Image (cartoon, rainbow, N blue to C red; front, top):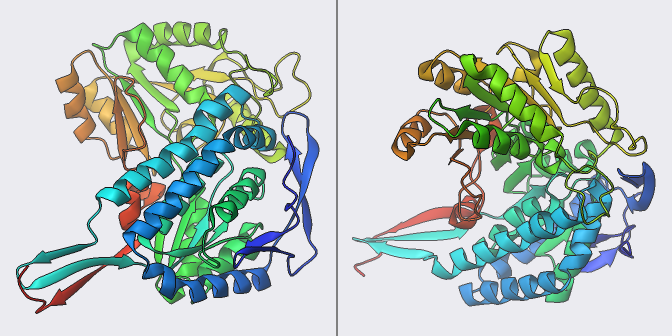
Length: 479
């Protein structure tokens, strides 16, 4: 693919412009371990320019009509669809997503979330009169948006679209690890005719750009998707200005396979869901809970599934699983796999090192551990790689206890042949999403977590609400 001609520029106040500083960063193709592009890196001066542009544009955009916002989103979506193959190619190049998945999951998710936000905006009532009071929803202000590398368009769309729909102006800082898709997205916004200052984008790292955004007194809302550590840093930086902080953070999601489930199907699906996106998904079911008496059976099924996974070059249409995103991620995952072996978990398949024939690229062997104790490191820490822990439970109460025994609360999964029973168990799980019996993911569902998995909910009308303030006008009069 052709890398954006704007890779050494930022999009500020409706135009592409040179950065304030001279720092550059190579973008590494994780399948080849070589640079595929070079981007400019921002600093506090760039943040000042971008926030000033967003602040100046806020009065007019926040006063825009619902129809104007609908029209802009329709243009963005139409251009995004036209350039969807470019987007898929960019995502595949920058973060190693197999091209088939980059098209039907990664790039598609950006379209799916923008279309769902558009539908939510069309149906949303900003004003309601109740008794003698007007309840009106107004734009929360200037939004700072920090997005990750693992689902780049999914998360950009989940933040930019509702912020636009709410009447907010914004500054986007995408991940510097996977910035090519964000550069293309900024081109799409420019072509759609977004008013100057409404959408701004700066590349950079967390300490230099992310924290400067969070500390800035003219930023009213911070929305971050990332690690729990990064979310805490943004919250601390935001505290002095009492701004709203929206966080979609880490996870260590449990997948409870109840005794009455179709065991073969449930274990097989659980392995594949954990390994999807090379394990780089925050709500992946990384802890599989099975009856202790069926541990050996679960390990046998999991081992068979591992032999079926097609890992290879992301450019190959037949590849299902690509590399992880970076050398840093590769080394961290390797260390955690080694820790699992050291602490005595049973290695079902996979392990340390690269798969045979894939010595170049950040490829991690899809790895399954059985007989994992709840206090083992691999059971507690978010690995963010293709590593599954199978944990045995004594009975249903024990399974629920184990599922909730984590600092995270992003997602959970329940498998049972009795849907009513699965629903009952779901109510007892402390997680923002609970998926029953391999239910299909949907852009209509609110997404976010309990505990250290964050605050706020993205997607659909729930994401729109996060970028709105509620004002009550008392004495307004009857409807």
